[in-house]
Length: 113
Length: 115
Image 1 (spheres, rainbow over the protein chains, first blue to last red):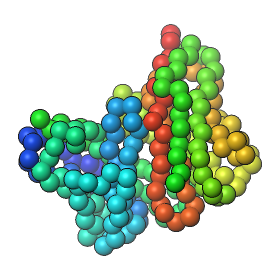
Image 2 (image 1 turned 135 degrees about the vertical axis):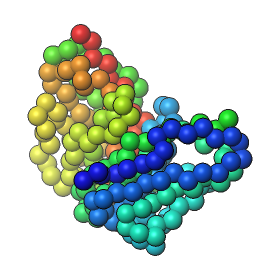
Image 3 (image 1 turned 60 degrees about the horizontal axis):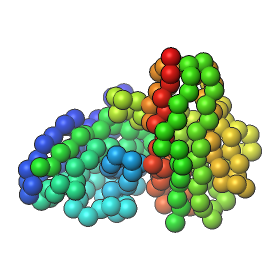
Image 4 (image 1 turned 30 degrees about the vertical axis):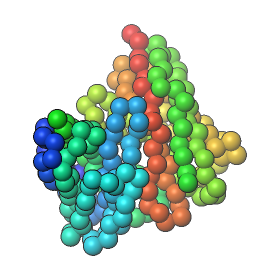
């Protein structure tokens, strides 16, 4: 199993540009998540999904959109990138069992200038 | 809303010694799950250990163990016989059992291991 795969690993955007961060998992996990990690701030939840066709906002959803058309894929869309969105982004997934841990991708480092 | 607090931004330990990382949380729930994750410089997030709140016995995984004090809402991680490879950021995380499916993370503790 590849686990959780995120692309790209690094990206530099100009202010106002848009992009999609890709995330796919091959573990048949129902639940998928997008987090952002800022220095000294831990991980903040952006969006999450409990299954195909179902998404919900986390703590910091503004400026982002998601979709979940399949169990495997959970892309994160940034519209009109802003410097405040400079961060490391992690996609994660888990089984629906209550004690299931998160399985993380390797992250995307995004810089908006 | 639940919160997770890691009050030690940075800790240091001599190689082969023992170190304890602190984590406290705030919740009104009786059932929940707690996790410790390790993030080395590679940025990868690695599960270290997990604890179910309904279990009184503290979880252990080789050199890693927890001290779970439910009444005090404390979940500390003890690393025994510290190794250079243990140097990393460590995050404490809480998962509700109420069906919200969300994991809440602390701000992390950076562990340095001194040779």
